[in-house]
Image 1 (cartoon, rainbow, N blue to C red):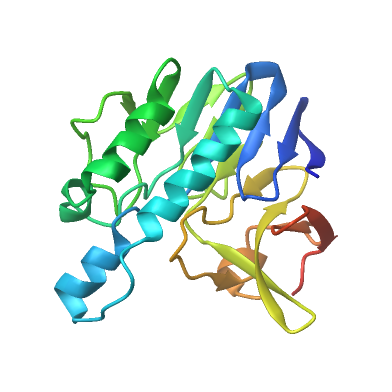
Image 2 (image 1 turned 135 degrees about the horizontal axis):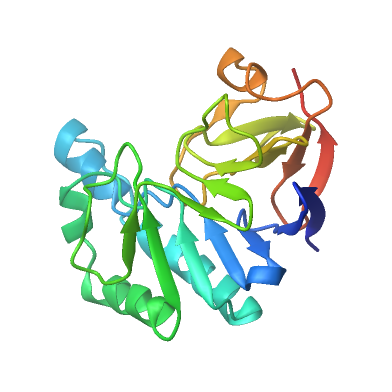
Length: 215
């Protein structure tokens, strides 16, 4: 149910879950998990939400890993919602994350929310390049063949908001993978200024579905 696309010379699969799979590298990319967001909202704003978003996000990630068995997982920034959120995972969530990380290379790319290096194992990078593609949290307008996150793009379809990938022949912007994340409409100047006129929005959900990027 994925949508196949090409960036540079590399074939990629946009998954209905909001993850990106790179078959040639056996690599799974997810962005903006924002683990611990409900705890941060409770601490800073007194806004009480059911504290299950980390569990839902990690279970979704576990399902993608079980289905694809990647050799490497790249978390493309904002994996945790703030410094204290990194310490707020309960024992069951910590176990889910440890199980996901076991037996594979795990790379944490820095994001604007991220607390920096964490005592969770894996490798921490500001950004990375793999086989001609650049992976970073926030898009660099001057970069070609880039995968980034940060903006949480979403599009309207049949009156519903759908998180989506944005892709053209120069870059790909990931949707937020986390359960409680908001989003930025594709019509926003921050996104239309980055994406070429013929860019696609690949909607997530039960099936990855491509439409012209709404502007």
